[in-house]
Each structure stands twice: as C-alpha cells, then as structure tokens.
Image (cartoon, rainbow, N blue to C red; front, side, top):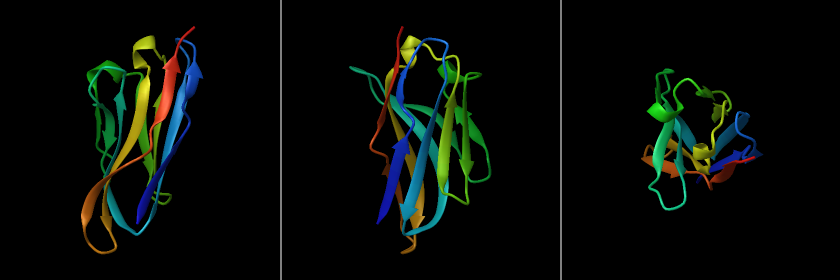
Length: 120
C-alpha cells in the first residue's frame, strides 16, 4: 500500500505565496516522477510542474518563473513553492507520483487534493 498526503493549501491574496507539500509512504521501492496537477471548476486537470528523480523539471507555461517544484528523496516528499499568486491559480492541487512498489510494480498514485484560493 502506498499513500500520498498533501498539505499547505489555503486562502491567499493576489501576489502572495504558498508552499504545498506531498509526502509518500508505504511499500515504496523507488519514485521516478513527482509532480503537481491542478483542476479549476469546469476545467480539465492540468499539469503544473513535475520533477524527475534526477532533478529534471517541467513547468506549465502559466507558472514559469513563479512556481518552483523540488523534492527530498530521503523523505519521499515533493514540494511546490508558489509565489506571485494570481486569481487564475485558484484550483484544487493534486500531487502525483510514479512509484515502483516493493513488489516491483509501477503505478501512478494521486494525493487527496488541496484547495488553493487566490482572492482579495
């Protein structure tokens, strides 16, 4: 069994910052990709940022220069530092990890989602 537990969402004013965290636990052998998606009301879920085990990162154009994804491999945790937040960043943010379990099967796991609301 593998679990992803997210934290750090909330309400912030435009221009503010938030930091999301997602910790993976359970029968983990290794984690390749760790990333964040978001889904706003009435819209499809979209990739926000991703970081591979070697540190290579990918960002959506809409967040480049404002968001930073990082990971702590010793803690099986991925972070998303969000600066200069805009109202259009409002969404439920989901952690996603591609995990090889101790049974040597690889699956994509999702966190429960955390609400980020940017509003004055």
